[in-house]
Length: 269
Image 1 (cartoon, rainbow, N blue to C red):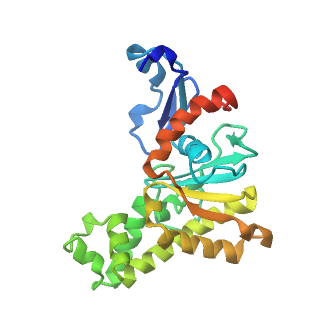
Image 2 (cartoon, helix red, strand yellow):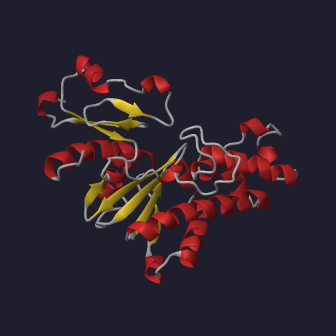
């Protein structure tokens, strides 16, 4: 590849990063990243025009251009993995909000009385503590205390430290009722979080991506049920809730799309 013909290089990072490439905050990376000048470091190795974004805008644009957000001007991409975040497309443009950090749905508080503390934001009972990776593991450990015959324990040889969302998914596929109940619980709580987004933003579609989304309808059916029961006004119950199409590649496609988006649509800072 002739690098002189590149328009730029898109970089997506799991932290809050300014358009000049300086990391200002992070919930899921080590604190050493805060204040790190990523742009200057990259320029030492390869001089180019760099485009930086949090790890939610990139897959949002990836799905907008190449995935489940095609031909939909108003949709929300929600990543559910080690954390939970939302990318918001309004009238075909990525919405960042007045302060630049719109979409932090994972740190909205679902249960302020909860004893679950989020290591990222420091709050108790935020959405991530129930529906992100560690939240699902915590819920699973609670459920199997009351259900010691669950197939989940067989899959981990009774070593609860080996529990992962993938293990719970596999147990559910094999008909384990405890695992299925866990996914119903996780999906219900995620649905409450997304319901708040829907009531406020009124998108045409919610696209759910990230590693946890691989659970498919085990996760999404309870989400849809919450929206069907609770969205108001009733017209909002028409919101489509679908799985992301690009999977793990959404961020890669989106990082490239950031360059195109800035040149042709003017990506907001």
